[in-house]
Image (cartoon, rainbow, N blue to C red):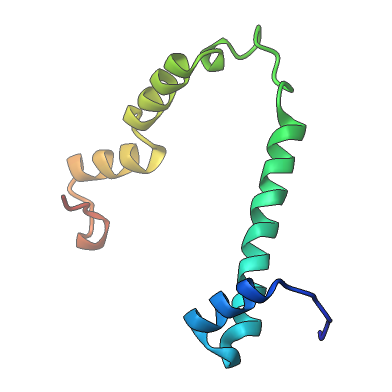
Amino acid sequence: MRTHVVLPDDVVKGVDELVGERGRSRFIAEATAERLRKERLAKAIREGAGILDPKKYQHWSTPEKIDRWVRELRETPSSYDKRVARDEKRGRVSSRHKRTG
């Protein structure tokens, strides 16, 4: 879509110095899309703030508790990990399912 946008001379000059006149539209489109993504995310965060009842979600009530909750979640084996471990005990794991490192 074509549109007419008025920009300060120094902004256009700075963009042209970085990407050239032929790259100006793409640069401005990408920069605008990135700003739009950030603004939408900020709006969602603002709108969602405070929706969780702290009585129901006490493990998220402080940064320290959130950190502990995330750490415990990461240390909990997934159902995939449990299945692979069980199959390894039975000698039924193919080489493609073995995890390395």
